[in-house]
Image (tube, rainbow, N blue to C red; front, side, top):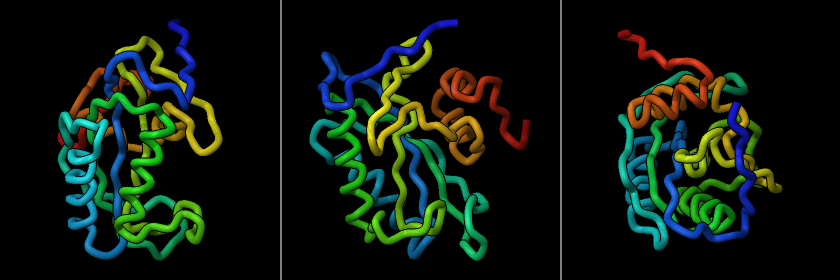
Length: 171
């Protein structure tokens, strides 16, 4: 088994790295929130949007009474440090009204952007363990709403993240 490399969350990479970002929304104009996320990723300094998955509607995970989510995954290239990328993702969320200090854990949200994988080219994926940032995302392997859009973009990365092949409902 290959050991993961631990990344300093404050260090800029030596070269642009590929990062997969989960995007979700289940409040307000979900489609507009998703569109904003893709546009904001594409226009943020230090980030290049490479590809985006289809948008999928899924049942919510968490407290009852929530509406369904729209979910997707973006593949980006960045020369930002993990901490700087996290700050950019949180800023994009806040542009759509999200306030993480006032929400219920796993509750509804206008926009949610989570770093899934940092530098997928590394065997075992890169590891980041810092306050407010754990990569690979610790629950990614349990979440089809993340794995299926990831598999659209990169089936091998999704398989590695899940620990087994990821199949679409039509397979």
